[in-house]
Length: 465
Image 1 (spheres, rainbow, N blue to C red):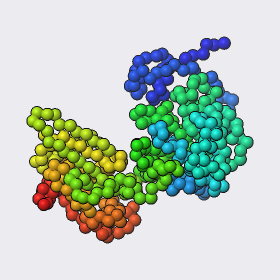
Image 2: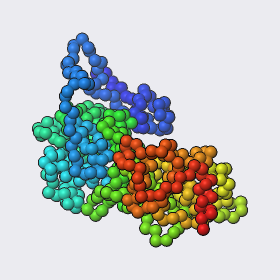
Image 3: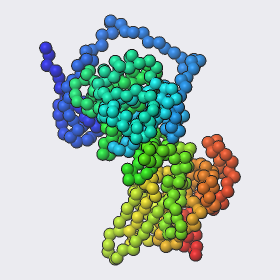
Image 4: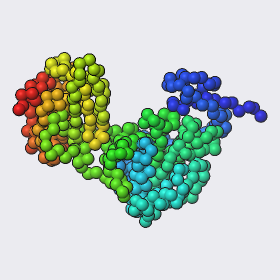
């Protein structure tokens, strides 16, 4: 019998090498190559002379009806998925330990089962009784979900062959699954790839929606081979700090919908509760005017979320090195705003420590936050509070110009609904700033003060007594 060849697989990118080396040649990571046994089943070369099974070809313009989406009965999850779960799709959900991935999927599975769906929940980390105990705590004990605790992919697929019309299959988690076709321990690159491939093949052939829970590394990336994210149809990221109440579900990849939508949940004693008005989580109750506090209307997909940006400046003694601390925003972006304020507006931050915080633990990625951050910094430096009923948004260029941003009318309408009366924003590119996606007119109860240069904002704040 021929000796089984060994190979070394990078645990970061999945690249294989014939011998061990300190650095992966593909991704450049160090000490990530681990020895694994070669493939035991698919190692033989394909012999095309034997012929293969003919596949059925269909036309893109054919009249075959597209599959209807399945409602998960969780509105925030359906929003992120683009309107519901597509039958036969594979969805991968990653997140930090204890963030609520299993809780969210168990709640969605329970609601679907109560509506008559045939749902199978396979746990590789907990016993079935432990899942029942968690379901009882969440008030889901009456949901007719099929539970099992298993890690063998062969056993799972053999069992599912005898179950008809499985609407959704939940695997918690993919890193615990093991395929006997591949040598190696569960969680290795080859095992995760092989297990996911077999489960996805079952989902595509049977039309069952597949939900995979994925572990993440310390950097926040989904553990295992990067090819796993390419294999699935949708990649979701469940974010949030365990010390905070809120949780945000983001779509990183979605073949059946947009990737800029978010779903907002609040962690309560009875589980995850949907938040219809996310702005209520991120706006603090300001009883008095405080310098350095500014409200910014962030846009996540089609959903505006009002958040509070807080800035604090502290004068330093001569010769001390100033500190820059940022929570919830990009460090490099803050450095750019400070440079523009110093070079174009004549303000001096070199002798100050600067602290910037997004209230509620929210992380802002919208470039329209530039003007709100600048307003908070100017207000903190001048020690002059800004109006409580005003919002600020706009993108700042290195020249000090304030540029227009997308969907200004959506931001203004959301601010008007929450009682804000004023807005400081850039001059729109045209007289009609609404677009086909704004779903409304430009009429808004918010009075808008338009500025084109950052220096005008500085003059307005410093001259406001």
